[in-house]
Length: 113
Image (tube, rainbow, N blue to C red):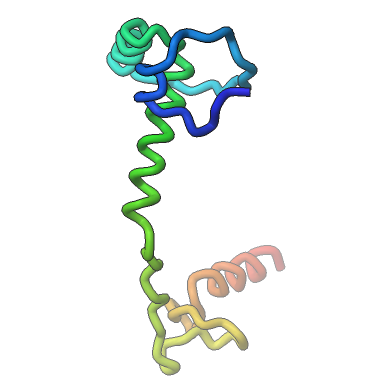
């Protein structure tokens, strides 16, 4: 199996080894990017797959570093007087005292009747 922690530097340093097992992932790549990947692979004596894996690993590592300690913003609290009148629903009311979900459900129920 391919080294899941492969980096571009690993491709530069090592000599070309035999083919390793991989799984197919069909991805559309812009032609200009594919050309650049081809050139890097040729310069490093590596396969395009190895280059893509190395680039993805480095990009993912950077993204993980930047997202450390990140928390999603708090969910906005809707004041009680603006909440949906359906028991247990905390969403903001849109029409007739109901949130968009419950209002649409009510409309569908009336249309079906």
